[in-house]
Image (cartoon, rainbow, N blue to C red; front, side, top):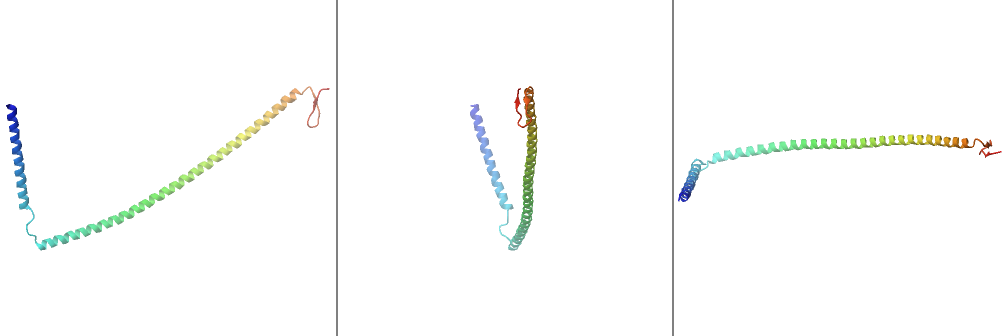
Length: 154
């Protein structure tokens, strides 16, 4: 029984709140009608208001055109400056890479030349040692003075 009573009370409260909402809406609608625009418009006021709106609209359009033209010009200038900087940086990067490659090539060629000199010096040293070893083995032999030397035992 208590549950049923509570449900009925809640339904009554909801119905009352809906009724109060409807009344408020109706009251607000009546206020709007009373406070709203006059039923008849004065042609002079209407003309004046129309001219004022037209003037304001044309001023707004002119201002917008000025902004867009100045803004467009500034954007184009900025874009051209950016493009120039990008092109210059590309050229600088290319020239820097080229310079680095050339420097690296020169360094590598210098290293190759130095290694070749060292190799040649070591070959000469090796040949000299081989000859010394050969002549040390042939020490007991008699050698002719003409070239190529002939070694023999008496």
